[in-house]
Length: 149
Picture 1 (tube, one colour):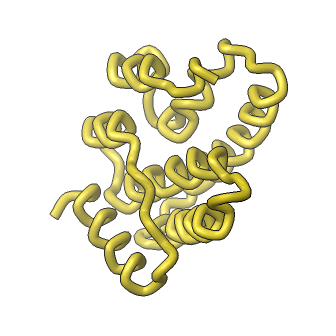
Picture 2: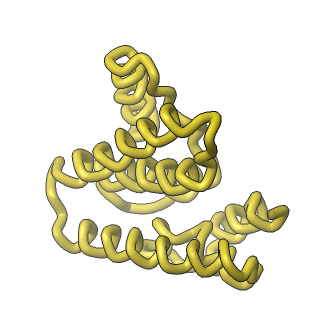
């Protein structure tokens, strides 16, 4: 079973355990990038989890706050759980720094709507492991929904 199938199976179990939890759709561009990288499966799964959590956090509103906040909490916990499997201190440090940077850059974007920030926001969690000029990263950036906000 590859990392993405493992991630999906883990989330199906979580959905059965927590009735309000629904795993958000995964960004397939992120998965396509991760397939190409030489990273441990637990790191790849942690990237999917934190990327999904951060994207979902931007969609919280009065109508969906209970379900959405639960999902972001579960996905964030999953991020730490996956990082604890076969712990790689260097990868964990890079990813936690990316989380901090994401929060700063996304807050700046939410205030300014500066499109120059979108590439970094979209690729934040894969950039510690690949170049922003990689063709799959460029595709990820091109598909950003942030350009329409």
